[in-house]
Image 1 (cartoon, rainbow, N blue to C red):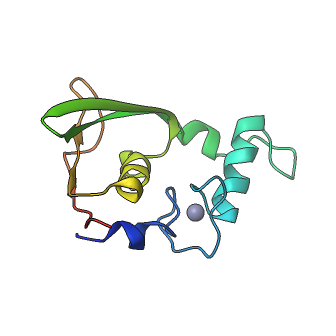
Image 2 (cartoon, rainbow, N blue to C red; image 1 turned 135 degrees about the horizontal axis):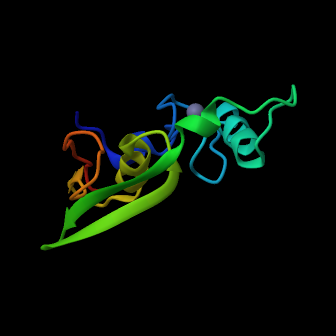
Length: 115
Ligand SMILES: [Zn+2]
């Protein structure tokens, strides 16, 4: 899949849907609200959101400019959340891989066109 960085700017990192507005340049309104409920540990009904059990830390590796850096997020559903955030800021092609020792998804490559 090859999308330009411009096309990623309005895609929610979590649900991957296009959104007119992203909160903190990351989540659509719905995902932001669900994430907030997960952070405080209860939803509008006063129950523990199911999302709490699904959020976990994930690391991916990002080769860039001859080096490889590891990017870790503490509370994500999947590696795609990190990938979308990185692709959104990319000024050139970006590749992703699973961090050594991680149980993350298989290596995935995405390209992002220069601005
Ligand atoms: Zn969303």
